[in-house]
Amino acid sequence: MNKDIFENELQIAKFTAKKAGEILIEKRNDLQHSIFSSDTDLKLKADLESEKFIKEYIQANSDYPILAEESGKSVEDLGEIFWVVDPLDGTANYARNLPLCCVSIALVENLKPVVGVIFDFNNNDLYQGSTNTKALKNDEMINISNINNQKKGILLTGLPNNTDFSDASIFNFVKDFQNWRKVRMIGSAAMAAAYVASGSADVYKENNTYLWDIAAGAAIVESAGGIVKITEPNENYQVNVFISNGKIIN
Image 1: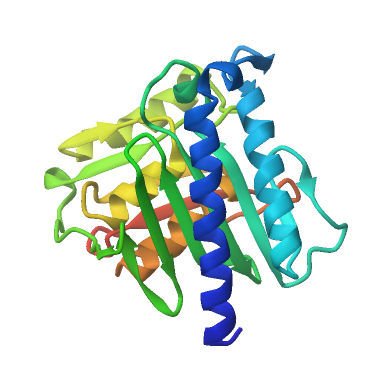
Image 2 (image 1 turned 30 degrees about the vertical axis):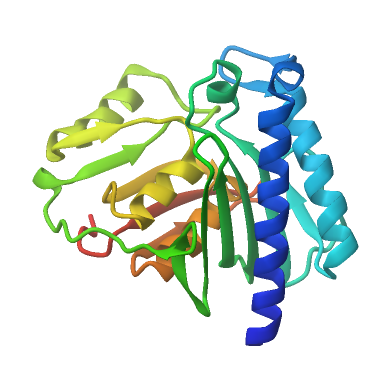
């Protein structure tokens, strides 16, 4: 993909993410209506409204197909290059007015995120990055942290909806926490990646999360100088992810 195409798709992602975020702010009272809930998951009218707008705008302005959280694939064969859309990452936070949620839009090539935009609409902060550009927050350059020791670092992590909550699984999950100065679970993978990209945290890692949760953040972290490892993809687009400032690699 050449530089001009990158720039065009980045502009599409930025415009779409901001407009979707404005919808989520302006119509919050109406969009907080639940359309599905379980013991571990929640879907709101907001998820559908935001995704509908994003898909319609992208389809009108880009030739690439879309993989979206709520509606899945726009075509059966997505090809090598396609959009990945999370219309509202942090739905449970949005439902309870916790300001840790965002719109997340990425473009991937051979499953590698190459363009990423995250709009933290509660704080009016737009994060962006791509293979050909530096990472920015509101047009100001951002960089990963210089922390090189877990004992001085902040780990961000989470528990996906289909987590094994057995005692043994939770024990292994929590055991790693002893190695870190602080551990945070904020309920938004995209925002976690944005915080790593901007140096507010040092590592984000999670197993069995979804590509749409982390694709945009991965592109932004790499353009900020960090490293990203996305492994174990399955047919449902679940992946294991390790996103780091590059100085802490375990």
